[in-house]
Length: 431
Image (cartoon, rainbow, N blue to C red; front, side, top):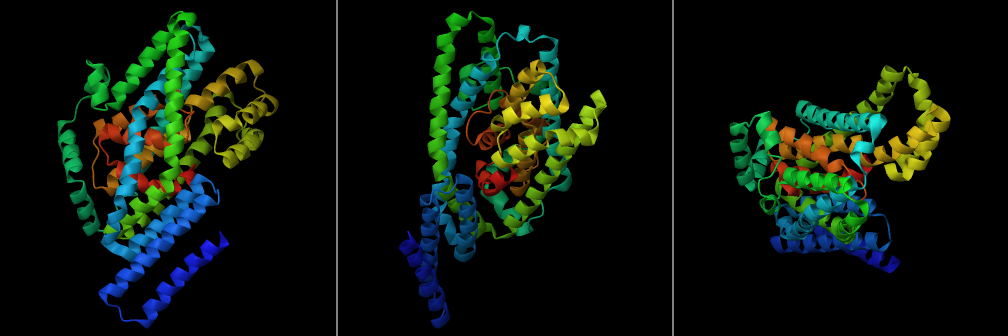
């Protein structure tokens, strides 16, 4: 491994010395570019072979892709197909995964009529707060516009690259369907057509409706049905685990192509995007204890002190499910919540109360739309809220679920999925 690393360093040093000692003719520049790209690819391969985590590999891919884009310029677009293949693989699994995951998740809730008063209030609060988090993300992204400060020439090139999508958005914005029409359109008149057209809201509705009906029927008779869709879900999750391993190379290829074509200005918008997401997350974190105080008069700072252990575990593991035992311990021992309440409310919350992810979905969708010069109307933004909220129910078990849910949201409103490459490199940091 060290010998390979030494060889990479030698290639890079040779390229630099060759640049300093030879005239900058076209052939010399091409040779240097090829050598540097090979060095970048080898470094990325070394990173994956050293068994570092996928987030680290993706971040390395982002950095190397940006450097490659700067060096190659527009010629870097030649490796875009690697990233395009990754996007297609993700698109391939999204519909069956979300459908099976949602159906099983809703069906596993049991007879919804038996949730009782506490269960109904809990479910309603979680959904309301999730919707609020998505709406906050949309508000911050629309107000601060992290993706709208690109130079005019870059915006023009991006619009030209995705002119058809942008034109479709303009047509949809002029139509301006009413809220009633948007809600009615969720109900499909032809389920098969919903899957063919990848209408995510309708697919989510079908999955949830079937899940509710299954939960109301005889459990013994429905067990094979649930087992079948659980198997589909497991297969799709395994495919995602395999596909996500090529994400570092996909990010490398897509970022190299984007930076090479449109310049480094597009990366500066990524810094602004991160600042908006982090600011929104801070607002959510400060709001939660305030809501607790409003309804229970429980002291604000005492609440923070009581949950600090769970917060630290959550920060280090990036997983609500992994933090659940500690969260229950903090709620029962430090806050004074009864075991009966915490054992129901907290596991349910770990599944459908992903408010940080909700805000992230809202900000990211608007950010990518702004980068591509697309103006989303009220109907599209309402669709983002509905899609992100409904897709969150029972869909927290898959790896890279934040990215998969983002694919659902972007597809619903027609935003180019290639924009995902911009945020993949920092997604884990924000998580």
